[in-house]
Amino acid sequence: MTKLKHAVVATSSLILLGMSAAQAAEYEWKFQASETSGEPSFKIKQEWADKIETMTDGRVSIEVMPINAVVGPTETLQAVSSGILQGHMTDPSYFSGQDPAFGMLGNLVGAWQDPYDFLEFMNNAGGEELYNELAEPYGTHLISAATFPLESVPSTVEIKTIEDFQGLKIRAPQGMVYNIFERIGATPVNLPGSEVYTGLEKGVIDAADSTVLSNNDAQGLHQFAPYPLYPGFHSMPMIAVSINKQIWDGLPEDLQTTLEVAFDRMAYDMIARLSAQDIEVLQKLEQDPNVHPYNLPAEERKKFRQAAEQEWKEWAGRNEMTQKIYDSATSFLKARGQL
Image 1 (cartoon, helix red, strand yellow):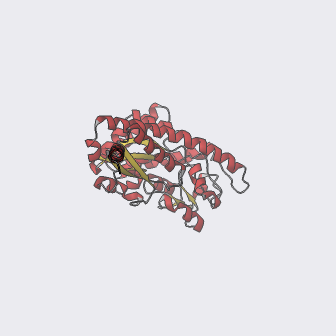
Image 2 (image 1 turned 90 degrees about the horizontal axis):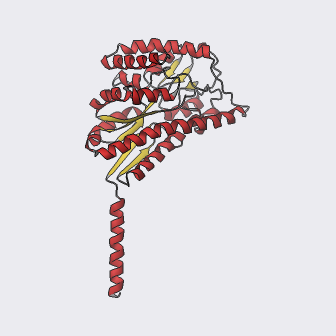
Image 3 (image 1 turned 120 degrees about the vertical axis):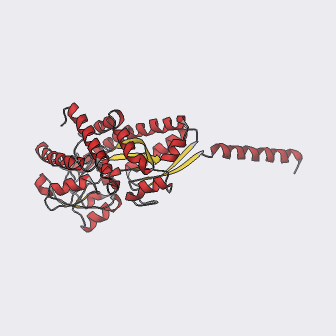
């Protein structure tokens, strides 16, 4: 090989090495989500992780993994705190067993008429500060709070009144929503979201508190549960986008700001996109003779809300933090004429 060729090869190698070094992320993290990989909301989370890599010029690389990828859904808080995961995007209700305040702030069931009300509470009325007061002693920091549009209830049987919940075996995560379904006479079953499909298929449950209409349809739930209640009237869980607190505290301010802005934007993007998908799916289901969507009447929704308010008051007395959450959320709702 001539000296010129040697020089060209050497220069090319240096360029490639330089490119690899430039492309190597300064921060590489694994975040576990609470959905399966096929759900539309999971794909939106992955898209936003990719956007953050672009926004930070490759300094931050986040791998978003589905439910159960590393640990179970009730174990991600501990996994993030210990560094097994660097973050999670999940419903804090899964951690109600560690502190009931996670269940209360993670899903104040029946409170929010609109997902944007919840985001306003979290972003502008002290909700995020309350959550970090709760979560930071567990070694995690909330970057941003997101939520879903109004959820659906896929059911194997018709539900047209609150009385129809009597004896109904309904999947519900541990926490407040579980207790409220008990309060209206249902028999809640604590299953992770990943087991809803088989639970409905095998008759372990009759219905499910299980995310939005489009997610449920993407999972094939309406094959076994052809009586979805939509739009939802009950659950609107927080998606806590959280990171290990030591990692957060060690980040430069510009990256902290980028992460906050990006995940706040993801929250609004997720609501808009899932709402549009829900409308498309509803139109499809209304043309399917085997599926029968039903919108629970206002007077029945009111009965559920009354049961929920009783449960809020019971939870408020559990500890100092649950009382703070109750006082803050009910003040917010009263100021807006919603309570």
